[in-house]
Image 1 (tube, rainbow over the protein chains, first blue to last red):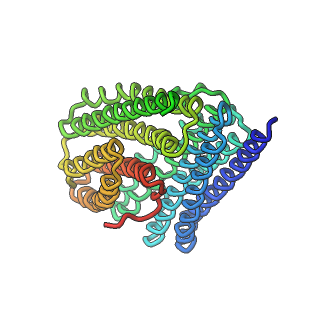
Image 2 (cartoon, one colour):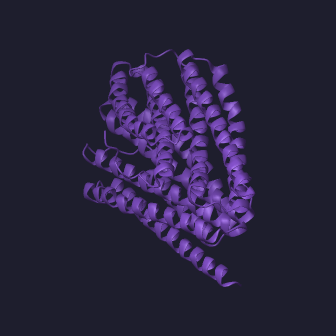
Image 3 (cartoon, chains in turn yellow, purple):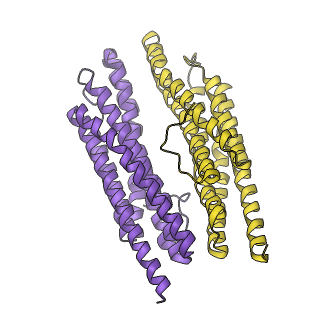
Length: 223
Length: 223
């Protein structure tokens, strides 16, 4: 190995650590936001919103790091694909961070109004979505396309759950028209979860591309 | 200029033409989807959904093109930044294509139910959002950061319009509980428009980065 490629290998390793660090931050933010909804904890929700700036900052630094490596080391083949994958996953993770702050906003909105019985299984849906995010990051670390495929399949289930939310919320509004505002807010909450699942799926598809050199994002997954 | 950099300049020119071609496709898709909502035209809506596959295909090809240029020409400085910007804008445009198909889905849903008086100015909002997308692509062609800044400012206005939709739709549901399903669908429709505006803003921020070498996406625009 030439000295140059040793340096590149070390840079890529550092990049991997940084994207996982960001992934960990975003996961934690999402977990806190979900907890804030569950426990009607506005202080916790506000702390999620406050820490989003740090996630944004990490994203910017990571992108600059990728560009620096591209310019200095001019990587090719798998190294190039890895850096382009990190550029995209970085973007996806930052959006999950934004979605976590949106979920925190829902927590505040709902906590400031009378408690409402959720007409859909928020816990199960949130759990499923968090699993998908975790699995997509595992897929990245282990460069495992089978883990990534599992994320893609789970996305269909989350889409179905989100779709069912509509009928459930409409039913709630018919039974309790006085809960209209909170009920409509629940649809938004469910959609944020569904969008986190979409972002996890994007990450998984970038991992598949990285591992297999094939862009799969517009091909349906096979169960 | 060395022969090599002449080839690179030509490749970059070709890339610019291709991203604008994709932008034009996506703009047209969005325009048709908005028209399908306005005219309750399910056939038109279905044609928007059908052509999304071509947009997806163009996105995949463009990404492969970017990777090929990175690997073969190992561009640096402004050329590198341009290619990374195209990688990201490509992604954003493809998502606008997806949002256009989502809007087409709304058109079908709404057309299959009794006509409903929109409680918010859908036309004005759609017009504003389409202008933003056009302006963000103009900013890219002309590498104009002032045009890009205008897109960022317009995004605040669209956010405000989307926010007002909630109260308007809730009011509609209180007056016409029998229109519940369509009314809730309108919130989703307004949100899709707001997300197109977000994507146009992402594009504008990538243009600013390209022109000024500064990542602005987490800095508030100054009016």
